[in-house]
Structures are given as structure tokens and as C-alpha cells.
Length: 249
Ligand code: MF3
Ligand code: CO
Image (cartoon, rainbow, N blue to C red; front, side):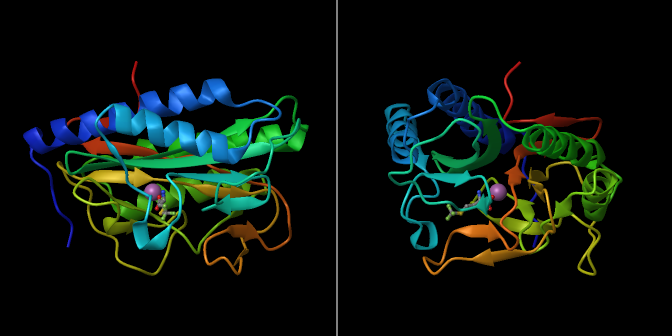
């Protein structure tokens, strides 16, 4: 069941999203050669808690950290640890916040130092895939219009679209209906309506879209070991426009 949000509820969710965006901006300043993914995680947890929020991923289905730190061929759900960032790495950071019971979700992929042309193109195109998807998240369209736009752009660059994981509704909890695939699926295709809060999150690979899950039960990696990027925003659908909530102008 898709839970539509009132104007007042959207205001509360916006506050959660803005705290999330500020947290991402602060973490971004720390990304550099030599920092460990665990240091990024500790910073995120402290920053969120000192601003009255709760890191929403921590203990979610047993996830052991606040931040997902997915380096190079890791697609999503990379667990922070002693890994030090190296020149040429790309790292996807995914984070969610519960602020007074209202949930936000956003991910970005960063380049560490100087990366290969291929890596740079992947990161940029994945970001463009996110905005192509957001462009379709308008009242009157349908949920699958989002994935159609995402996969069309990825395919033009010969990149692989991850199909095993999807975007989702968000706001009252971390994951709500509808599921938002990044391709045209055979599943449900509801109409997009005012009051929907959607987390749109393309996961795009340099090679095929196939992934494997590690024995830790979390880390999702490309099957062929090639690079992967992940960008995500939480957006609110209004009758006459769609607002990117995890963005502060
Ligand atoms: N951000 C992920 C998503 O968009 C959720 C991560 S769940 C966690 O669906 F448990 F790994 F934190
Ligand atoms: Co998400």
C-alpha cells in the first residue's frame, strides 16, 4: 500500500532530508586518500546524533553501521571498516536518517583523487541517470516511467543496470511501497500522485548488471568485478512540480 503524505508530513520529511543533505556535505569534505571507511561512518553517526537524528540504517535488519561505504566494484551495502581510501578509488556513500520519526535516504558516489576516464564516465552517467529518473517522477506519469528513463540512458553508454535492487517509497519508514525498479519490470506500475515520497536510486555498472552478495550477508558486488556507481535522492511529488528534498540550494 502506498502511503500518501500531507503537506505537514512532507514538511517534517523535508527537515529529515535537509539534515541528511548537510551530513552528506560534511562527509564529502573528509573524502581523501588515507581516510578509512570506518572514520567516515563514525563522523556520520556523530553528526546525525548531535543534530537530533538517528542513523536509520544502524541495526536495520541487523546492518552494523550508520553509513554504507561501497568502494569500486561494491555496488551497495559495503560495511565500513579499516579499508583506507586510495587514489583512483570511487566510493558510494549511502545514508538514511530518522528525524522525529520521519525518514530520508540519499546516496552519492565520489571520486578519490584522480580516477580513470571510465570511472569518471560511470560516476557522471549514473548521476545523470538519477536526474533522468527524477524528471519522470511527475504526477500523471507511472512509476515504471522512471526506470525506463534510467535504463535508456545507461544503455546508451553500454553500462549495466542492476536489477536485483530497487528504489522505493520512504518517509514514514525506511522502505515503503512502491518499489521503483531501474528498468521496465513486469511488476506493478502505479500512477504517480501528489503526496508520494520516492527514493530513486540507480545502481549502474561498467560491465553487466549482474551482482553477487558476500558471505557477510550485506556486501553486494558486481559479478565481473568491474566498477559500480550509485546515486540516490528522496523526492516529493506535488501536483505541479516535484521537489528534490535531499538537495539544498
Ligand atoms: N539505502 C538503502 C536503500 O536505499 C538501504 C540500506 S539498508 C541498510 O534501500 F541496512 F543497508 F542500511
Ligand atoms: Co534507498
